[in-house]
Each structure stands twice: as structure tokens, then as C-alpha cells.
Image (cartoon, rainbow, N blue to C red):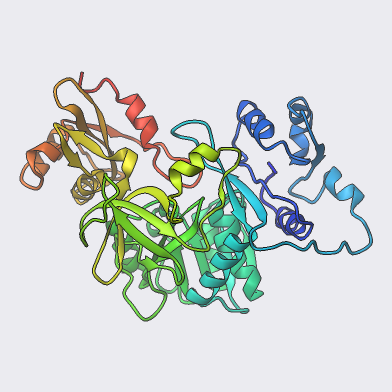
Length: 442
């Protein structure tokens, strides 16, 4: 599937699952070269593309049937719909339901194999945990080629028999206008930052909304607090991955939604925090988060060696995220293991530095990376975005951090930019930043 968001797109997903097919949604921004890789790797029986892309995609096909689907319901897919009801295929929880390709920032994209059991367990758990009701109205602003928009958002609404309002793109005013009839919104941090800054965003506008959920990228504590100050509502932040669906969630009720944390493991999901040598770390100390449960995927498509590297013998999946876990079980993400900076043998976690920079006057957001350093191995570099109308300089940022952070954690260079590079789900692309500033300390 590489088509634009539409109700027909959702119906096609459901139809594929009813037929026992394996659904493979692709980012609509992927180029022909990227698409050629996915077609060759998945070897699909059926390919569905946009009508305008038909000739180009046909030239890439080596296997399977090609049909088209447009956002207005047109396309060859709908030309041959049978009149009779097609029986629902029998499938077990272990059977494959979908393959979702990871972004491939550290190499070629991997196809995460998600089973019917994976999808159903996560959907049923979240339906109960977040209080989905038949009278809910989900304002859907996310793409539906990704776990967040396709599974986390839509499954809850579908299981509850709720109403879904589709937005094909994100427009703050249009989204806020739907608050009057909506009750649930799921977005990424960028959405909430833009909503907070919109003049239409008021406490009165949010009266009908019962739940704002943020995910797919870390939400700054400051952004969390600004949103609450303006709307009177506290965002529920949760955490998950392509390979696992949702892993943790802040409480919907019966507990605090703590800014900067991602909450507690979902019912039936186990997590643990391990050190560099695989040892369990002390409570409150950082380590790599591992997860086990019915939500954990079956492995990577046609990559048994990679699967064996990422899933331990006892069934725990190594997320690659560095986290801490409190005595009560609450999880806080520190960063990605691959983003860890090691300078002169000392471990430096970017999130700590980013939080210090983000709290400075005039700073909108920041990203801290490690780049090659001739003496220390790696050195800290900060890339900073200023708030609209504010003036932020390298000298001022470095001076402000002198009394806040140990010297080895302080950035050796600070670059002020207009915007940070992000992927379609709003995650900052630190690999791109490391490449761009690779020579900064040489």
C-alpha cells in the first residue's frame, strides 16, 4: 500500500485482514528508489498505489498485481469488488497480520512482522486503559501508514464503535474547530506545540475534549506545561515502537500524568532496564529498556540474524532506548542507545543537556549530538531553535550552561538553526544532524 489517507484506505486494511492477507503500508513520501527496495523485499501478491503513480510503480514491479486507489474513491481497485460476501479467513494469534518497515536511519529498512495477536492484545488493552466509548469522537490528524495513526488511534475507535473525523493534513484552526464535536485527539509533540501557539486555542475551545494523547517522539516537559496552562488539560504521554505497539502509558485516571515521563508498563507487558553487559541496573539508574509481552513482534521479515540480535532467548526485545525506572515502576526515557555520547570514557545522555538548554529564555527546542573529537573520541554539539522573535546566540547558551552542567557535559559548539530535521512522525533525525556537523570539532 502506498496511497493517500482516506476512508477507503482504512476499509482496504480491514478487508485485507479479513481475507487473511498481510498488510504492508508504506510512507507516501517514499521515492521510487525506496519503493523498489520494499517491493523487492516484500514480494507482494498485490500492490496498491495512487492513480497518478501507476505507470511509475508498474515499471518497478517484478511480482504481483497492481491496482490503484484515489482519495475520492476512484481507481481500479474498486472496479472489481465482488457482490457476494467473502468469508472471513480463519487465523490464529500467531499468524502474520502486517509488516511495517522501520525508517532505516541506521541501515536498510527492516520489516517488523506483527501478528494478529500483537495487534489485538494492544488494541484491547488500550481500549480499556484509555476508556474508549461508543460516543467518543476521534479527531484523526495522523498518517495511516504508521503504528500510531493506523493501529493505536484507529483500533481503539473501531473497537468502541466510535466516530472518526479524518483530517488529511494538519491545520491548527481546522483541528481546534473540531474540538466542539470531538473528544479524543492523538498527535505528535509538534502538533501540540503548534496548537498551543494558535490564537484559537482556549480553555473554552477544549471543553468537549476528554483526552489529548502524545506519542511517536518525546514531549518536552515545558511544552507539556504550556499546553496545560493554556487549556486546563494535561496531555497523556505514552511510549511505543513499531516492533511492539504501545509499551507504557501515563495513567488516564487514578494516577498522575508526569511531564517528561512515559508512565507505567501496560497490563500484561513486562519491562526491565539493563546495563552495557546485560546486567540489571539499580532502580533510577539509566540502561537499555527491554520489553516482553503479547505485544512484541514476531521478528524482522527475512532477517533471522537481526531478529536473534534484538530478541533475547527469554523473549525480551531490546528496544535500544535508554531509560530509567522508578521504584513504583514509572518509566522515563533518557535517549536512544545509539545517541549516547562517550567523551573521554564518560557516558553523556543528550536528554539531560537538552532539558537544560530548552529551559533557557528564548529557546524553542534543541537537539544534542555527539560528533568526532580528535582527543576525546566524541564531543558534545548542541543544535538550537530559537522562539519566534527571540535572539539566541552560541555565546549566551554556553555561558548559561556553565553553572548548570559538569564541564564534560557542556556543548563545545552551539549552532542556532531555523528548524530541526524530522521524519514524518515528528521524530528529530539525529543521524542527519550527526552527518551535517561531523566536522564541527575537527
